Length: 118
Image 1 (cartoon, rainbow, N blue to C red):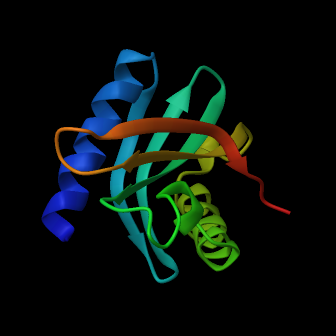
Image 2 (cartoon, helix red, strand yellow):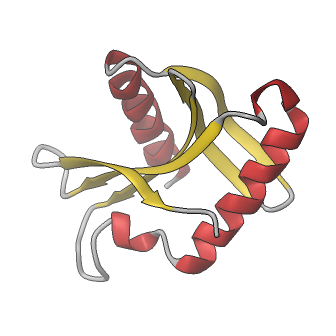
């Protein structure tokens, strides 16, 4: 599944760059987990979780970003910001880019501000 994940992360990055965001990091790993993409949109740092689900049997791809996963992403984002203090004063946002469906019939959704750090 990692190979499929890589394909969708590259696809999401390309789509977000076309929308005007700049990539600051990809697959940034911390002890709390991985940040798929760290992007910048003007004066906002955007932490992007990319999800793919072939089938909606257990909910769609966006629904797989559970509160537990959100908490891990927030901790990973805090570590990224600590390691990159030049960005620490900027506004931050958590987006989810989800892909659902079988190959050939995939729908994509970009959820800006999908969740917030408490």
